[in-house]
Length: 118
Length: 198
Image (cartoon, rainbow over all chains, first blue to last red; front, side, top):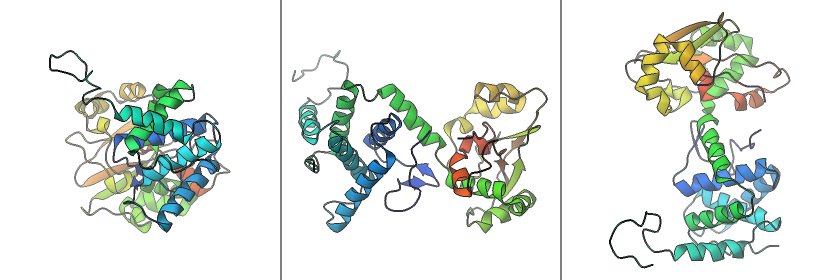
C-alpha cells in the first residue's frame, strides 16, 4: 500500500522526472509524517488531499510569501490532525516555541570545554 | 472550524520537529518506521517517464514491438528525449530471461527515462561484481532468480544506454495504463528488481 500521490495539478508534490524532490530536510519529515499517518489509518487520503488543496487555494487567493509546496503540505497536515482532535495547532506552536529557545549547538555532544549557556 | 493558521508565523522546520515529537509521544508514529517510508518513496516513486514507457508497452502490443525494435524512436514518440543524442536499447525480461544493466566504466544511464542514477549504480562494487557474479549480486539486492533463468548483463556506454522492460506481474490484468505506471519502479527498469503486483 502507498499513498496515492497526485502526479499532476496543484496538489502534486514537486518531482524531477518522477522522483520526489525535497529542498530541505524538514520537507521529507513532513512528507513522511503524512504518509505514515495515512498508512496507519489516522486519516484518509481524500481528507488530506482536500486540506492540501484548501491550503494551496488560500495561498493563491492571497500569497503571503514565496511559493513553497511543503509549507502547504505541513499546513494541511496540521489542519487534518487538528480537525480530527489528534494534535492541536496551539500544542504545535507551544512546543515549537520551546524548541526555538534551545541554545546554539544543542544537538552537538557536550564533551568539549567551551562555555555553554546551559 | 479549528484554529488553523495560527502556527504559520513559526518556521516550518520547527513546526515539523514539534509535530513529529508530539506524534511520537502519542504513539502515532515511529520515527524509524517513518524513515523507511521516506526512503521507499524517495527511491521507488517514479521515475515516471520510464514507467510510462513500460506501462504503454504492457498494454499496447504494437508499441511494445516498436520499443524493442528501436527504443530511442519509441521513447521519443511519448515525448521523452535526451539532449546528448544517446541511443536507448530496450531489452525485455521474461520468465526465463533476465536482463540487468550496469556501466562498468562510469555511470552511463538512460537519464531521459530514469532520471539520476541511484548511488548504488555508481558504486564500484556494483559495477565490478554484477558482471562477475550477477546472480549473487541480485540476490543480495533482494532478487532471487531460479537457477534456470538465464541472466544477461548489459554494459552501458556513452553510445548505448540500456533500459529493461520488466515482466508484467500476474494479477494486473484488470489495471489501467495509469494504474500500471504507479507499479513500475526504477530498480525494475535497471533489472535489479521485479515489478510487484499491488
